[in-house]
Image (cartoon, rainbow, N blue to C red):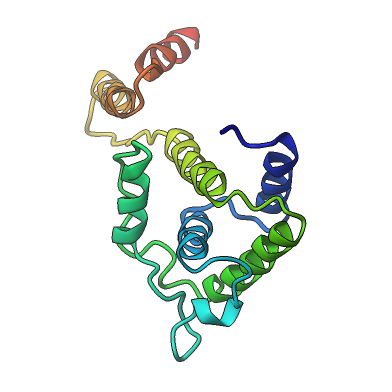
Length: 174
């Protein structure tokens, strides 16, 4: 079942307004949604936190990676994703309250919401910048080869997108 436009718009607005752009907060969205699927809505925000309230219970790179793999995303978000950030517990609380509001409006399609967060991770991975490793001891050709190798690696990870061609086009346009 496709996500309603209204739900998609609400999620996009929430993501932008609450700055859920980087790995840690994207992980919060994914893991808290999974917990809501397991526990049901409404969800008590404090139930998402560890005993000392310093971390989101169950949030780890391994858990995020496992969920992403269910949606066909093989790239790993990192081991500490969201675990070491002081802002993560507050982000989980704000997001849980948002899910509860969606639930009260009868918009909370948790399966569709979880897929939406998984897709945001794919967007995040696909939009990471390439790095030009400038080293005076290397030739310009060697530095360009490094950029093209990064593009080829990303292209293999994201079927259907020609990153290497785009990088070549940009390098020859200068």
